[in-house]
Every structure is written in structure tokens, then in C-alpha cells.
Image: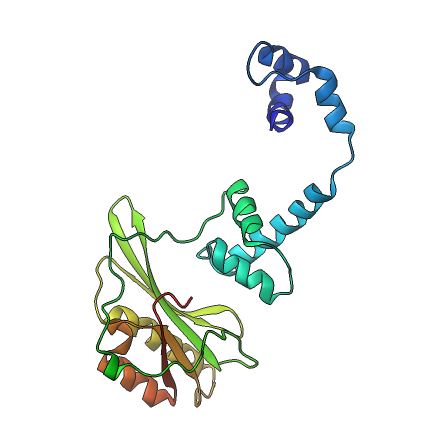
Length: 231
């Protein structure tokens, strides 16, 4: 960290003035130590970290910056990149990446009676071999300077694209319906056949309203509901 700090100041102040300014402080670093570190070959770990960081940044950007460390870790494994979750958490902290924040203040789901809940057709297997085979819907929230903002979206699993979304300052039933209507309209306007599509969400009354089910039926799609926090 000391070497990185000196490097961050070298263009403006020069190396030697920075080293002198750090003398007699807890951050003091000897000139010989600094120059030895600069000429030392990069370690295998630092090279691996650099490669992983680049991939993590790409995954985070591909998913509109909403993925936290857990989802980035799962996506890396889907891409065949073996890495520990703690390593993903460490590298995301270092490069300032984070997902949409969640806490216990707002409620995003209102569980309905178990007797009316559709079955779980996905069983946590969030993979697809063709377009419009599986859509995943979720609802989250973000704290802003003006208060909480709710965001609902539909992810097309095969392409990893968000095909429908809506944001609002309050939680209401159509907040889940609006992204679905957008997603269906966009894909059908492109000539897609949504027959057999599975639309998966976690349990919550917003994703199980009557109009929501009707819109799925009209498109030839079926609903799937998993447990809370499936994705």
C-alpha cells in the first residue's frame, strides 16, 4: 500500500519529496525498499488478481452494475472461472464495485397464501439453452438522497439482458406487472414466440397478481415461483 501511495503522488511531487514527507511517520518507507518493490517481478497472485479484476468488472458492467459479490461469484463459475467467493469480495472492495444495496427497512414482497403459489419449475437451475426459455423477475430497492426507490426488472437468462424494467418511489402491484408487459411487448414486436417461456420470481404478492398471471397466459408463458431470495 505504501508503494502504491508513492506512485499515486509521484507525477505531481516526485518520488524523493514524497519519501521525505513520509519519513518519521507510520507510513515511512525507505528509498531502497521502494525501488526494490518497483523492480521486483509481479507475483503470481498479483497477476491472477489483475486478470480476475478485469473479468469481475466486465461481469458487473454486463449486468448493469446491480450484481453484488455473491451474484458475480456465481456468474464467474457459470463462465468457467474457478475462484473463491472471498476473493471476489476482496477484489470488488479494492476496485470499488458493489451491487444494489439491500437492508431491512423497505419491504419488497408481501407473501401470499401458500395454497395459491405456483410451483417452482426452476429449482435454482438458472440456465437456458435458447432465447426466451427462462425469464427471471426480481424487485429491489436503492436509497437515494430523495428516499427509497424501488426497481423491478425482468432478466432474459439466455442473453443475460434486462428486457423489462420499471422504477418507482412506492411499492405497488403494477410495479412487477410493468416490466413484464415491457418485456413481452419488446420480444413479441421482434417476432419472438413466447410459448413455453418460464417466468420465475421469488414468492411475493406483487408477482402473483391476477393481471400478472393473465398477461403470462396471453403470451403462452407459465409462472414459476421459488423461495424468497432465490437469486
